[in-house]
Length: 450
Image (cartoon, rainbow, N blue to C red):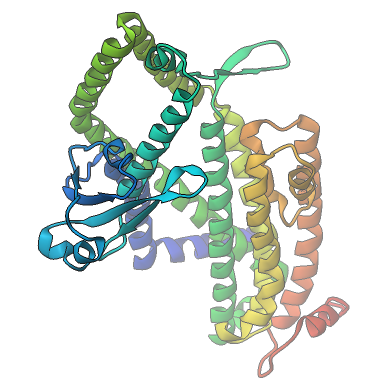
């Protein structure tokens, strides 16, 4: 045990002193924070490019159905052929040409947009939404209903489903499915990324020591299994330290960035809310505006409360356990592969069977986020080679205690057997040189006696 601890300490200190470790540890949070901040920042930005759209309405009925906005200007053309307009769009200062033609047997017209470049989704959506509303209105008008406009305004209702999670003891807590799905995705993907990254570090470390013949000196005073486990635990300690630093720095940077964006956009958002309320008051009355404002405020409060109500103790504890056990399970296999080769380029064929369960777990994760209690997610959260990822997908949604215990027990048992087998391969492989070995030959090494 003492020898294994010394190897762990050596592995840990050697890696944390490397410039690459310091560089990656300090700069990665900038990337992670940017992934959080930039989408939010871009979402608050407005596209201020003014786009002039020429419209030729061959139906003579729908040209006025598309309203202008601050950045989308509509020009109706009646005396110029479409071909001529198409050929001189840029010279005439038009962003695109929209033609509206009749469709036999349909009230809906055929819409075609011509542009020198791909039209933006904003322009396409504005045209489609405007035309859909116009067609819906015209269809309703055929029923000859009096005060149709007033009725349509009255029937428009915003519905908000409030989600309450009930515990076994009857306690009710605010919940939010989107928050839970986001946490599940982040945990699962982080697990996948770290297991792959750190497993490869174990394999490369074994190959380096084998090529430098350092391992020949170490095995003279340390048992191969102690050498392998010392390396695996040492890299695990490095990984946990790195993750802890990433979480702290990313949370800090993202918090500061989002706060600055919130302050910057707060005034603009308030103005938009006031404008929206004024519009609602004009159309539906002051009471409806108050109700809409109350709903908006309630939604925000519910979201924040749901964020606070997550069982972070279980989530963090579950992540640490499944991360450690998942990493140790795969690291043992990566170490066995590293002991059987002399170059990283020779590992591709041997590593493929190891990576397939991880990739499969990611596909199951996508399904599991939508249906965490489904049979697919359940069984793959029990299989030890996929459970570290899939169980973390299910964990934020709530998992019965017996399923957690069973999954953990199966994972621990499989880890023990895998380490025992990997150690047998490792003690033979680290002293083998000059040949590429297959899984078939590596399995034979398991039968060798000490």
